[in-house]
Length: 501
Image (cartoon, rainbow, N blue to C red; front, side):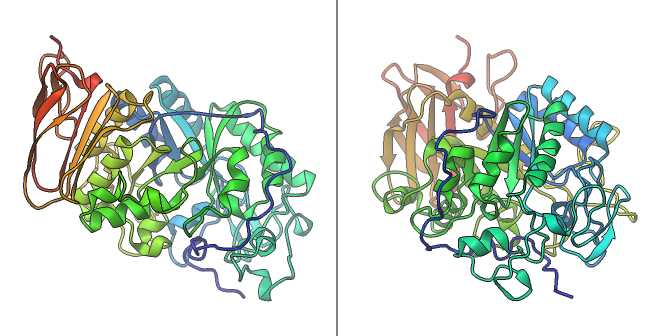
């Protein structure tokens, strides 16, 4: 029996310098794929009832526009190691029933979040089924490696014959990457019309329930033409972003997927993390920045993040991305991401773990523990659920991102020491970052209209609009302001957090 690796993504993040795979034959985007804006938060492994409550009580009021939820389908029950997070990425059927909840709870979550102004995006596993020889699923289905009764049989899977055990060995070889097995996961033959129909039926079921978008897991392991054929079968509009992992200074694999939706820019989180760890704010913007040294995925196609559920566990990017374990420095990295006009940002919301396979907080029967308690409080930051998205710096910057969304330029760019930068977003917002160990005292042009503004990294505008819950900054008639930034801190002002006159 082949060994099932404890991470489904350990080999995914190998840097690729191979010749670009062929692009899709059709350059146009499928009519069913639509654009969308605003900050996404990934509530990793949350229960559906908790996601619904979070939309109503926090995400909607804070300005988050969408939630990425973990795969909702029936998945294999993995017992060794006991109930790891990655079992969710081993679908057994397309029934909506797993540890996060059943179909009714899922539908209720979608409806309640939509009413709160928050869309639901599903992490969709389309490339493969399970990586075990036989077992049972979370809804009671039985299966074997290439036999999923009523759904797929042996002929519906790739058996590439290119490598020992049909596993991918050369991650620079497009044929292996798209027809061999990723760490033993049964690879669907997505060129077959019957397979495409079943995958599209699953997505159409989600659309019928009100789901507004999908993240396509392991999209790089699916031929672009196959993905296009599936997306063209959809009944309604869907925002699509694709997990395509590239390395090196220039995207190699990603361009073939640009016509199909937004594409994950894994290098972004690593580059921002490297800059902050080195205390080099000047590497984030301006002539000394990493932007001048490499070709990034185009702004209008990039899905960006500092960390995700894979690389925060040390897989890919050398394990050097900042995570919630890095404390305030991580918050500053996310703050910069939400301040700088590049790509569509996604914020990570994690749970605490010690081993990289550890599943979410659970009881003795492996039922996922609630985040929202009966008394209205939340179990965040106390050793189980981390809830980075609720941290004041990050939550405050969501409003900044929304207020500046219509301005995709940076003005009034200033650098002091290598650890200090500041810039404006037209007349909509101003952001400053101090990575030094000394307080920054400086007077700078902000681009903002005269008035008093709340520093949203440290407080909010009061409901009556007459004051701030934290520090305020006065912008003079000439647009300048006297700024004081403590060591390793940020300051952000925006038009939506200006005191009423």
